[in-house]
Image (cartoon, rainbow, N blue to C red; front, side):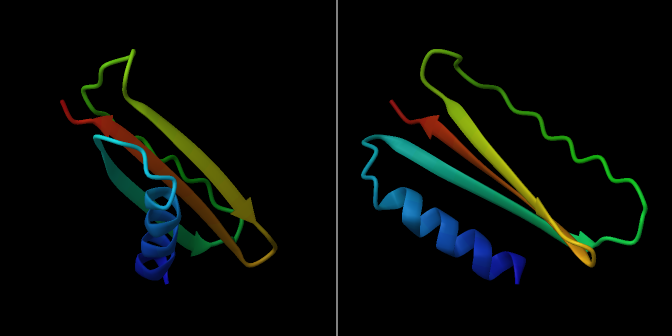
Length: 74
C-alpha cells in the first residue's frame, strides 16, 4: 500500500511540471495501537533551491506519513 501511495503522490507532483527537479517520495504506514514512533530523515540540500513537503493522517487503527523531497538538478 505504501508503494502504491508513493507512486500516486509522485505522479501528481510530476504533473506540476517543475523543471529540473528530481523527486523523492517516502510513505510510512503503520498500525495505530498506542505506541510512539519517530521518523527522521537527513539529506544535504541547498536551502535556496531544494524543498520538501510532509503530510500525516491517522485514525483509530492506522497512521500514515508521506514526505516528498524536491531536489534541484542543475
